[in-house]
Length: 499
Picture 1: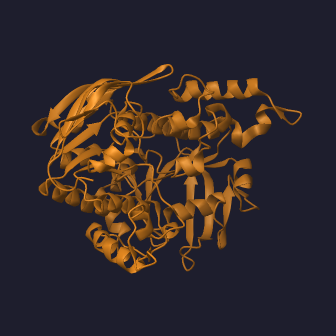
Picture 2 (picture 1 turned 45 degrees about the vertical axis):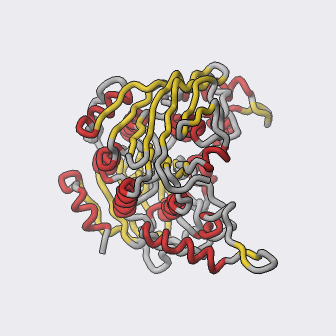
């Protein structure tokens, strides 16, 4: 493996086709050592396909790749890794049964002694300085299964830093990070650049691209549609290149009259904060955002409401009726639905088709005499595909083959095919593009105008401020304050979020 030294990488007329789909169409671009290149594009634009080709996971249908003046028709995984290319994937590759050091040094373990036994002390000594550099609040011998999603994201970043790479590809590396963790990462990216390491930075958070990128390359429908030099980078210019049009500003002002209390929780106590209780309510037709730092107990709170996590105490009322059972099946039967933070592990069965996923929560509606009616299942899914603009050749397409934004729409389609009274969205736009975000915001607003009560958890303060009618801020298992629209500001949210 080459370590240190400069790297030059060039894609020349790279195309990739699948049956019925042209994922990449004659893409040409270059990346050099010591520069940060931002790659932008909507979900489905071809970014992930491009990165898989670079990582050696798949080969192009045509074109060539040039690394350090060596021409390849395709790269193997070994050639990519051996060239000093490291990846931070959006979809985490974590082994929960290993500790942090074992995950970071997987395949590069340190052994000692005549018997070549695993040297855990040496591995931890190698990993802990990297974690400290990232500002992580966990250590090398922490079990991966105990880490939050954000902490696992930091662990993946630490893995890339441990490889002494010449080029690091970061695919949505901040999608699960707090503002402070993001700032630490952007500082580290600047240090990597100063050390002569190239960084390809893929993000839907355009402010981060503005902060760190030396230049920007935009993809749309599998083609390079534009380049921006440092002085040309702005949110407006990037959005227009990505979507081919200007996005109208989303208005967060509700156009419907808020009704009475639809969801009420009394003295809810969760397992993460057993000494704190929460009282909370959401009105019919209202969108209430829940803000707070990672670790504040937001996700655990809504999971206890929905019945995934067992609450230690408290009561939940839907439209004045007490939920007598604390489980997700009972919640669903009463019209309370959850769109989870981790859509791939918790919201979808990826190997199932779109129509199978959409029908899954309500099989009775597409069944006759205990057997699933495949035509009914297909029609139900096609209606949601039309309503939500799910981009796919058909509803028989496996969900794993969809872009992140379209996968999220399938999760929504499951519930919208039923009759929601209360919808909980946990990080609903994590890892999806600005065009899909605007569509999901519009769906949320349309639901509220139909009288659905909506709870939205988001780590993106701009998103919380944009979409919410009220904002509840959580801190250490408690709601530290509730803000009305006239009080919305990042400063007010942070003041309530931190001690």
